[in-house]
Image (tube, rainbow, N blue to C red; front, side, top):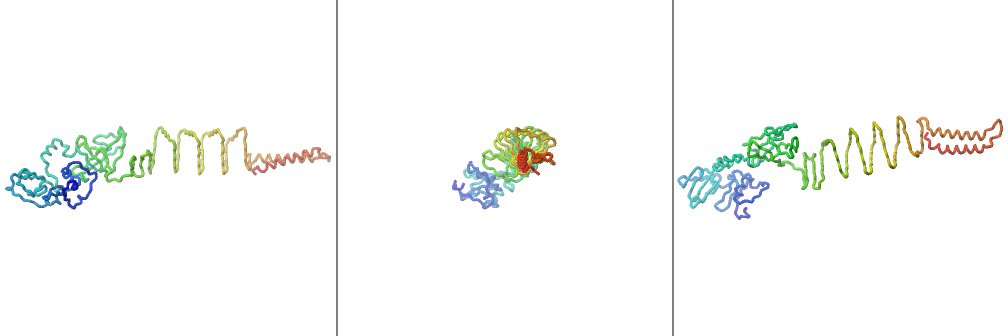
Length: 436
């Protein structure tokens, strides 16, 4: 104001002169601004006064030049006098704030050559002890003005009144979703003239019978309290404020619903949604449908319990990679249908057991192995086949050299010997692949 008007202002060196307040703007006249500075900056017993040198004092009455300096004016010097005013000849030294006959002057009027002084009886905080007649008439006509019920006020949550156990009906006597409140003064202190409210309803969005968004504020939360129709018996909480609370990180364009730093739902400006908790997430539904182009899961331990059927349809390839063991147990049948090639590659032992029968059916079956064992466990069919071939070879050898009563060898001895050679050759092929 000093830079814009050129008027010199005197401000005492007190904490209230350097304590900032938030969100202060002004668009009225300088007179209105000076009149309201005390209320805005919580200056006790505030006044502003112009000095004889043209400067303007702004601050507490206790810090002004008039504090404690009483001027005694004899009633004989007064042109007129009443309960709260006195008319004097021009007395240039008297300004608002001067102490005259132990009365603090609140207003001076200069009419022609007469000076009219007005004062009010105030308490130790500088507040008027008695309301003006105009104010008394207005408050009589509009009682909500006297209690300030026409204005929203701040209040502090001091407890949860009567939480619902489910299905309870909210009424004015027991709102259920309500809190206990202590109304605050403009400076943030408790209004000791207003007793605490025991059950003030909290705001609800999208409400319905047993429906809506509900969350009790913690004790100490600052709320805005208002009064329906200006009636003190109809208070309600209009909104909750984050004042004096730690605020989470929220970027422009984000939406955040958070219970505490470890439990939250966040939607960033791009539309990505994050849901996180350090406890348990439980979803229950009659039918659940999930549609997504890509899904990625990183899970420590997973368990699924399905009471009825489960069906998986894959439009492309299906890949399963397991570092540990795979155990598949079924009480019914296991059917695998493959339109292409079925291939199993096993580094260890492959074992298939059946209590009844294992059946292989195909136009052609190939068994390829370094060694093969086919049988009952004690008997190997290939061993029997090997012995059979050996018997055939021995038989051919015997037949080739046998005689009848000292006669000559058979004419076909060379043929029988060739059979022996062929049998031993076939046995040489079979013996290496038989598992002993």
